[in-house]
Amino acid sequence: MNRNRTNPVGVVIKYVILIAVSVFTAFPFVWMMFSALKTKQEVMSGGFFPTNPQWGNLISVLTASPIPHYIANSALVSAAVILLQIVTGALMAYAIVFINFRGRQALFAIIMGTYMLPVAATYIPSYIILSDMKLLDSLTGLVISSTISIFGIFLLRQAFMQVPKGLVEAARIDGATHFRILWEIVFPITKSSFITFGLMSFISTYNNYMWPSLITNSKDKYLVSQGLRSFFIESGAYGTEWALVMAASAVIVVPLLVLFAFTQKWFISGIGGDTGMKG
Image (cartoon, rainbow, N blue to C red; front, side, top):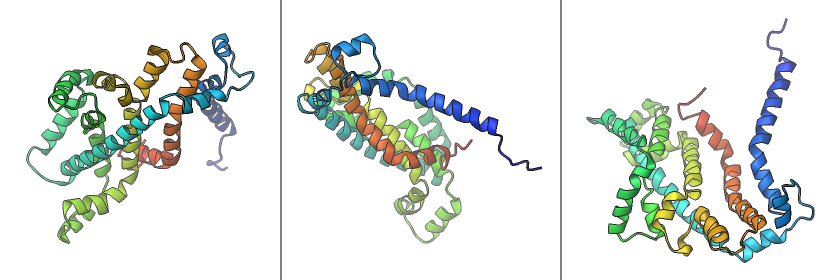
C-alpha cells in the first residue's frame, strides 16, 4: 500500500479554500477596476459590470489631472527611502550579528523596544527637528524623517543570523574589511531578504498618508494618498465623479502591482527562506 498517495478529497478542499480566499482578496481591486470604466450613475447604482466601458476616465486621469505628478513624487521619495533604510538597516544588523562589542544585546533590545513605541508619538519631535532643519514642506524632509526602519533592522538581522559564521571568519582571516564582507558574502546569501524589505518599505512609503499630510502643505509636494484625497475630494476638481476617483485609484495601484510582479519570487523566498522564519 502506497502511503504517499495524495488524498484527492484533501486536494480538492485545499484548492477550493485557496480559490475562495483569492476571490475574496482580489474582489476590491476588481470592483475598483470595473468602477473606473463606469459612468457616475452606474457607480452609484451599485452594478458590478460597466454597460459601456468609459476608457476616457483613465485617459482623463493620466492627461488632465495631477495624479501622474503625485505618483512621480511618491516613487521618488519611496526609492530614496528604500536606499537609506537598506543601507542603515544592513549596517546595524551586520554590527549586531558579526561584530563583538560590549552591550551588543542591550543595544538590540533598545532598538526593538522603540518598535513598540506608537508611530504617532514620534510626530511632534520629528516635526520640531525638521522645522529646525528648515525641511518642512519638502520631499527631502519626507526622506530624511524615514531614514531608519526598526522592522528592517530586525528582518535583516534574522537573515544575517543564517549566514555561516565560518565564511565570515575566513574572510576576516584573508584580510577582508567589514564592508567587503557585507557586500560580497552576506548580501548575496541574503539577497531575497533585502528585496523583501525593499518591497515592503516601498509600499509603506508609497501609501503613507498621515505623516506627509502633517509636514507638506504645497500641492506640488503631495504624495499619492494625500494628493488623491485633496484633488478629488477637497478641491472638487471632479466633484462627486466617483468613476474618475476609481480610475485614479486604479492608476495609482499599477506601479505597486508591477513592482510586486517582478519581485514576488524573491519576496516569498525572503519571507519563508533566509529570514529565519520558516514554518
